[in-house]
Image 1 (cartoon, rainbow, N blue to C red):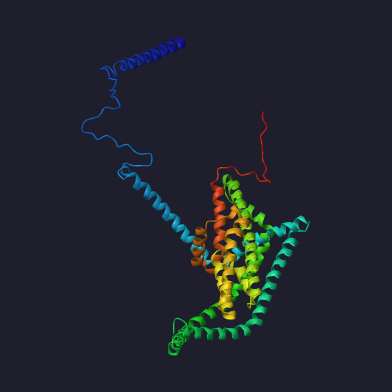
Image 2: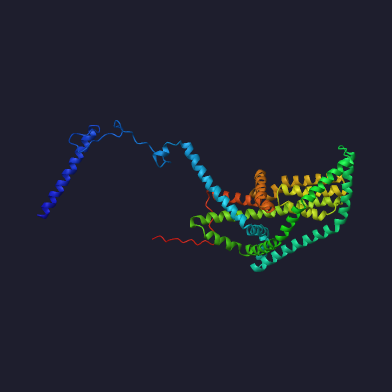
Amino acid sequence: MERMRGRLRRAYESGREAARTRRAAAEAADGGVASPASPGPAASPEAMVVGVEPPAALHSSTVSRDDTEVPHALRIAAAWCWRLIVIGIVTWALLKIVGTISIVIIPLTVALLLSALLAPAVGWLLRARLPRSLATAVVLVGGLAAVVGTLTLVVNEFIKGVPELSQKSSEGVRQIQDWFKTGPLHLSDSQLNRYIDEAQNWINGNTERFTSGAISTAATLAEVLTGTVLVLFATFFFLRDGNNIWRFLVRLLPVAARWKVDDAGRASWATLGAYVRATVLVAFIDAVGIGIFLVLFDIPFAFPLAALVFLGAFIPIVGAFLSGVVAVLVALVDSGPVTALIILGAVIGVQQVEGHVLQPLIMGRAVAIHPLAVIIGIAAGVVLAGIAGALVAVPLIAVLNTAVRRLAARTVPDTPPDAVVVASQAP
């Protein structure tokens, strides 16, 4: 009985399947028109029901019918706008945070620049079998001694030459007054006295502002000392444990992004080191070139002015020009307009050699930045952080340029030397 029941059930199901197949074949032969015996109508997809609005086709970028009523270009513009607004808000918040803790950010940035400059010296000592801590301490103490010695020489020469320069300055002022009288302006004594009185009144009226600025500067002396100590400690640990610190930061990222970020970070560090060392070399050549002309024409404060040119060269384009103007003014007061014009020509010539020969030759393409980007970066740095911002702007642009290029590259970075690769054995 059970076998008979199973056979009947299989025969019934096969009969139903055969009937469904014949019905489907008949409907296909009739062009999709349902027969009266069909269980339901089979209308074609193109059929329309009178009085009923067809559903609107949705674009792949829309999620509702309301979005289809907005032009595609307007939807794209709106998407860009709200994303840019979010980026602007985040950037503003980051700038506020950086401004709040600038007393920490600026020393750390200076420590990074010094670490990029001194890292090769530490590497040389490590290859000479010195312990890492001892090598770092030797390099840091040697660099600090060089800076202190240079500042001592500059201050001593400045103190030594102040009396002579003040005497020549008074003579230069008298020559300028005579030129105002006998030159093309033909000013009278009363006009000169009036202009001098106005200048003196302006100085007297702004004495309180100058005094308050000096008081505020004295009040920030503790902050300067704190920043100096932080620079020294941060530079020491960056030189000694910089690689371990970077690995710790990379491990905080998702696994899929670690190798890419590590590759971009190491390339950016190499760019920063190349930029800082090249800038130091270019600044040294500028200082020596202008200092030779100052010594040849017996301009006072030749060494302090050369040191000023060296420091000014760390701000590309603008810094070298301003330090050169100071040298020209000193030459004008000390030796007259002819010597000042010669010094001006020397400053312009050295800057041209720097811009067209030294920087392309020493820095190369690795840290090449367009002059427009340099000017905009320096201007933004001055507005945001003053002199410190101007010093940091260009290296920051160079580092970001390298990092973005590496992150946007489609190449797979090399496997780190300390990576552990686990492979499964084939069965």
